[in-house]
Image 1 (cartoon, rainbow, N blue to C red):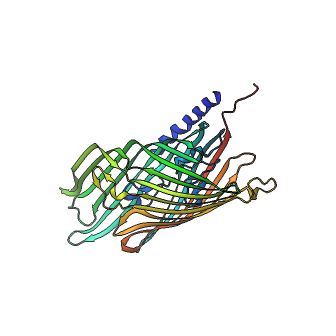
Image 2: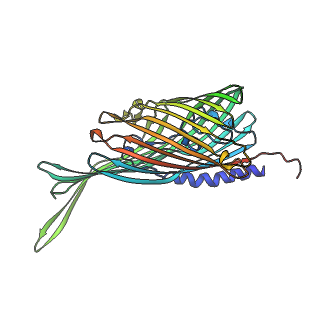
Image 3: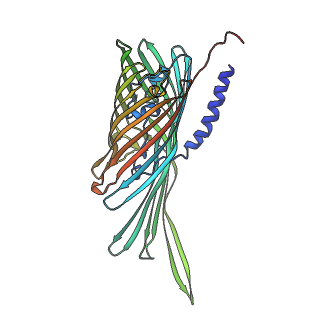
Length: 434
């Protein structure tokens, strides 16, 4: 009981500041985060980030798989897992006119996984859902008006705190479910300034959305044992159009400042007018139907090959009762593999290292200028065992390209680096002697 109390204290000390931090954490500077809910985060974290994100059918007794809640009971009966990760993204944005770059380094996630009974396991944690972070400046000219300057900028994050359970109702069949709490704030702002004429009103618009609500998602994994410690695992996940309570506020205003001569000097006369103001209004955001399926071919302690398909019907999602015209259905394909030369080697550390690689292709949920924004990436990484323990340091890298320079769009070339630490311990051991 003393150890359980210490677990509760550790969880509280870590989760409380992390949840506060998640409110302000921002992990993107992409102009594509201006649309929808921003840049959507992958649920494939840690180990499988180096495997193209393919993880829906993956079961590993020493790693946490948050992509499918049915995997939570894959750990040993006395195991307690704690994992956290940070990531960095280095991007170069190219259009037909210019190029720029940006770097982002942030906390990514944390999670716990442990057994409750011999037939039930649980997991809890905090993961990112989406990020908004952009600053776009546009200079243009309009006849009879002159030069004008428009800036679009926004920030914010949505985070997902979850508590999940997995059970095994029949041998080789695992069912899981997550209770999710989605929360966070997103802001989208625009400002217009006329540069050549002091007699035009400048305009500003500020919009903010706040989300606070619970939801559920479900998972299944089925294991087909084969000879020679090999097996095939089938996995599936489902989230059925959850509705989240949301609050929206909006303000639009115009202002002007003119220098007026007064005698031998001048004075500045300002005028500001609020065009529209909407106090925080309660509504709903209907998220898409989400489903995915995967298959994993495994030889225990040696190698694993995964394939995933993932789909979200964002074309049906509604935001405060309306459909966003730039959103379309998301489809994602991923394949990845892991190889361990000799997991139990005594003499060679290199042979105990896990080597991973993968490929992903995503047709994203954005449709801009009649072009669906696609994302292609290759991933690779390693799992470094920690001396005299079952804990692991996972390092994953991804090189990819998103978008295009055609049709006045932006091409993003990026490199991601993910570092996660998975700590393994044996808990709930009944002592024979005090």
